[in-house]
Image 1 (cartoon, rainbow, N blue to C red):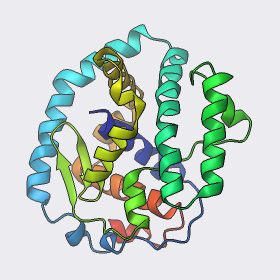
Image 2 (cartoon, rainbow, N blue to C red):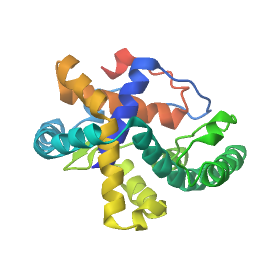
Image 3 (cartoon, one colour):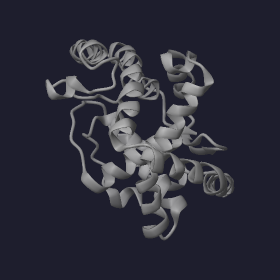
Image 4 (cartoon, rainbow, N blue to C red):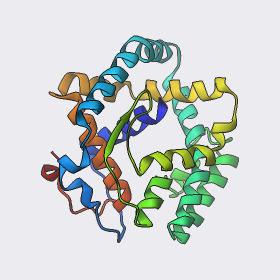
Length: 239
């Protein structure tokens, strides 16, 4: 469940604040025609509605209780800890994408945060100019020329593309957090859902069609990651 909420929160943040980056790869052509990007919309909407009900009746009440009993400093530390573990996967994908200089920087980031940052609880590296990079295997597949494929919504897991499915499998296997005990994994999911509370409330209150808003936020965010912010596709093409 965590992947859905984390990616959705990041995507909404990007739409509201904007970001910048560099890359030579061209934007995914599948994003140009929305009918091609979401050919299974009817089924996707049904699964999206199911996920929304699960969140409303289970995830949301638990995460709100978690927000009530935990201070922001603790939630930030937990998020930093799991983000630091994921930097191992980021470095792997840096190398597979040929980003050697970035892989060196991300390795340095991981080492600094693991040591000086007390196991990643504190993002010391960011203060030293070693900012967080978002790289995953789905982006690596894009660099290798694998097409995006259709937009899909999975029960509990949420939105992804057909290219993102094997990407998720690889990233899960490469992330050390996948091999810790279930209570630790549950903490990761709960903390991610709690930190996404504001973004999800924004959708409920502001989006005329939450499904469309979520889909376009997700696809724009994925396109942004694949192109490192150099996409020439504008929002009106996506909508």
